[in-house]
Length: 314
Image 1: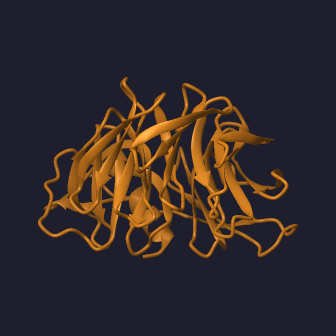
Image 2 (image 1 turned 90 degrees about the vertical axis):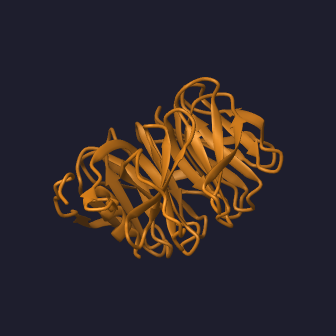
């Protein structure tokens, strides 16, 4: 399954026939979806539909998406059939799910209700095996490539929590920019890039857990992804209707792609050659082709519009 296929499926008629003979139609918060295990490491982001009542099936799917739902559940979706195979109760207002590199654990960032925490799901059994207290309400999460750390963007506290996965404990929290919203770890595990709604990107050294650079540019930065080679980071600016390209060597913005509308979530193709931008306010996904080397600028080549559907149709 291509990245665009699942994004479009989620945007249009996600989880078709999750309840036999019905299509789910409860529109909830935009959610980040990781796919495991056969597309390990591919991040898919799209506004998600979900349900609180789908019954699990006996057989687990070979490739599953874990979707955070505002109703306090995580839906497990067979990506081949778009059928929900399990619904897992987690903490208050889950907003994001991030997977360990081996796909054995799913870490759920919860935005609502104090005390704040991250739920840990065993993906073999689809059960919550731990809840890790953290210092603030989490928006999005990212896992270190070695699987040893989880980082959460805690919007209201202005901090990023650093979680040790072996001890299942928060071992540090790092003060970053205004309203941190999204996080991404470089492929070598050396740095964490944090998109702040206040319009900056904070760069954290993963050894010292200290901010080593602050990058300005954009506004209302709602997502960030990093290329497979670690050379570039891409941020979505909902307020400016654009995607900015950051050179991770110089930590400067080197290009901006104007999309119009309100780009909200980003996904990168495994090859690194295409970035997909899902909007907050429409169903059209922008496709941005990435040149092999700068200074050639990335450019939007087309928009993908999913077919309209009746969310309550059989």
